[in-house]
Length: 133
Image (cartoon, rainbow, N blue to C red):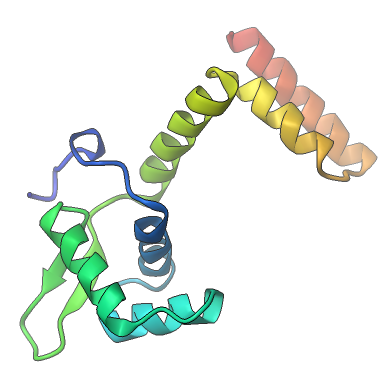
């Protein structure tokens, strides 16, 4: 798949694939070893071969590009971070909150503490959402 590949044409990334994408978005083009080391800092031990296989699958699906010009392959993401997160979030909101961003925000706010100034900003955002719907 070329650089203009549309996310909608791809399968939605799995949780493990999103974790790999997060590493690549944060650190840029990286080797499998580097990605695996970063993932192992975040959670329980993940084998190098598991990370390699996942990244190979992601490359085949067009989610990653692979630079094979040196002995150690370097992977980079084909997917733009903001757009990918937006699409994944929209699917989540559609599935869990019947498409209501306001319901999601209210759920999140029920689990968080905020200052008076933050509440004012939140209220403004909620009013904007209300106006848009």
